[in-house]
Length: 194
Image (cartoon, rainbow, N blue to C red):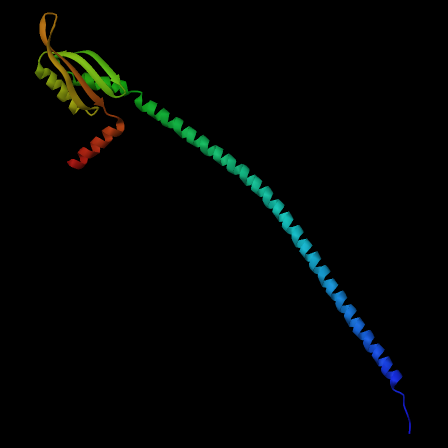
């Protein structure tokens, strides 16, 4: 019988197997290390990109904040200009207010009425005068009430007086001068009522 010694062959097979296992283990470790390095490089690149994007956004934010400040400044300037224009419009509208008031009063005065004084206190007008009779004073009041410029005509004083030896009626009236807006509202109300 022939005897074959297989032990050296088995030992050699085991050595090859151990070398293969070690090779696979080291390859696996190197592969894992390679994957970790690739992931680290990729995440570092992503972080760098995000930091660059953040810096860009901060720059844009600063620019937009500056523009918003300019817009707020422009808004306040616009409001200031609108306020000034409104004042100019009011002054322009009021430029002839006193003149129109005097013309309207002069047109309402009958021949037998004489004015002594006239005071205008921000649209509240008071006047004193002399009239030939109570009827003349009543006609004057009616003329003022029908005027589009005045409202709320009230007789505060009506008494007998003497002027240069002639008996007359001394009177005082108070009434309100209507603004343009009030006149337009009254005109519209009268138009609706008809």
